[in-house]
Length: 289
Image (cartoon, rainbow, N blue to C red; front, side):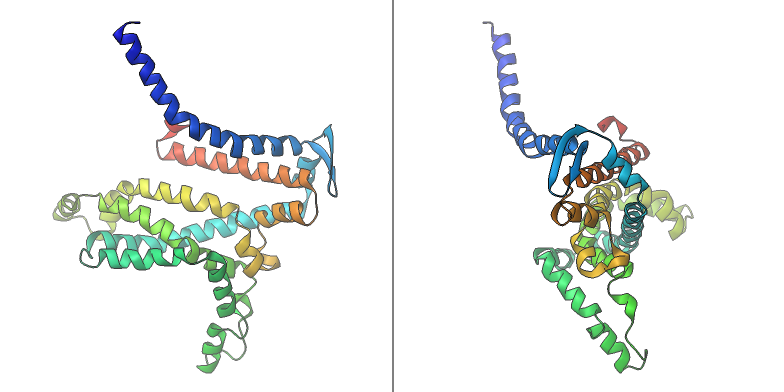
């Protein structure tokens, strides 16, 4: 065996050692379970029963049911509205961190990240208490004379779901944007201002395009998981805040219709993959597909 051949074999061996463990992990804990669910989505199903007979009935039922389509629409309305609110809130925070707070940067980052360390169920229940009819917000507004009776839309509504999701996901949008903005040289901004660009032009023509990778990372980290959210809508959403994740969860755990639950899950997965492909295309990263 020549020296060159031994070198090539050693490189392949090192590559196999690095790739094989994560590949096996994904195969066993992701691809195999997802393949089983895909097969189940085409089987006839009833209450806690599955018949291995090929059918499109589960998909037909989803696309012809107003309840499921309404939940799908609700999911995208809540997730999109929440994502827009997160971006609007996160840009000023991230920009301030990146440009104006070198002395207090670590402290502010710590304050942003520390809520993530608290169990998310505790955070949801805290918001549920605060938004209730006798909660802190309604009690404060009534004591100040702003309202005469408790505000009903604060809890068990789309608003409540969006508010809790904003609180839950804000750090995951701020951090990628902060890192992207931190990498923009101050000289570029100073040069644009010296050439007569106002703050609005500087933001839209320089800061926003250069921070687009951070925005894309936020989309992947936040918007995609929000489409499958079910804990927050269950606890604070009520009937009007019902999302597709709740439908999937109820089909598996309550209705016992695993075939329909699998079909709905793959419809959501297909939509998510299409969205990711579109975002990659817009971001000029389609070669990653």
